[in-house]
Length: 118
Image 1 (cartoon, rainbow, N blue to C red):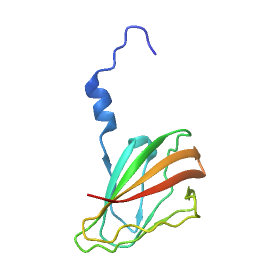
Image 2: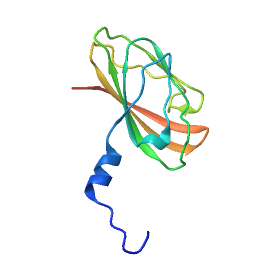
Image 3: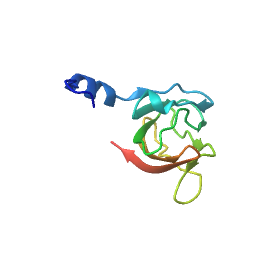
Image 4: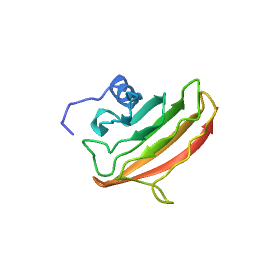
């Protein structure tokens, strides 16, 4: 902290806004771009390993099914779940799931799925 420096609530709130990820065959995400992210899937996709990882960083990715639904999301090698490396998303059109992440190391990002939010 720098003496005499004040962080305004607008700076903090702006830093917490979801960062949109671009839907692509492999969804790329830059961990330095924000804390929380969102992507709408328009096909079966893979969530890529993040760039600019920060050990100890935690956040979430809101994953939305498009109007078709039944989209899948595979995880890249550095993304780990309690049961291995696969997740099963909600399949309804416009379904919303959340992936909570915890960056343990640059090659171990813990992922937990929370499904079917309304």
